[in-house]
Length: 95
Image (tube, rainbow, N blue to C red):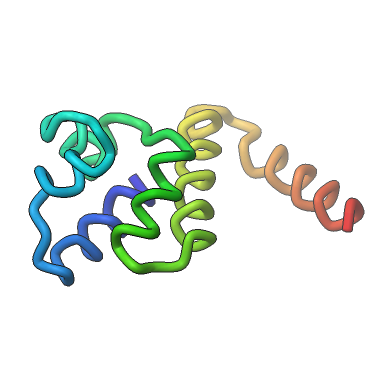
């Protein structure tokens, strides 16, 4: 969802084909296409490799990847906002 949109934008800016990136990631093109559409989760290692292949900031893509993971986990939870707030406070105090 978050990551897929961004890697599609970057891929198109660089005039690359999905099959080119899929080959670099050692996956088939349909699987890569599902990652861009948000139908399949990329692995952390794939995100790092994509950042390099797309010449973009690794932390930007990892942040989008992690946001997508969190969203999928809590999207249907009634108390999601409260939980995120508590986690945010905990992360701030951890610094």
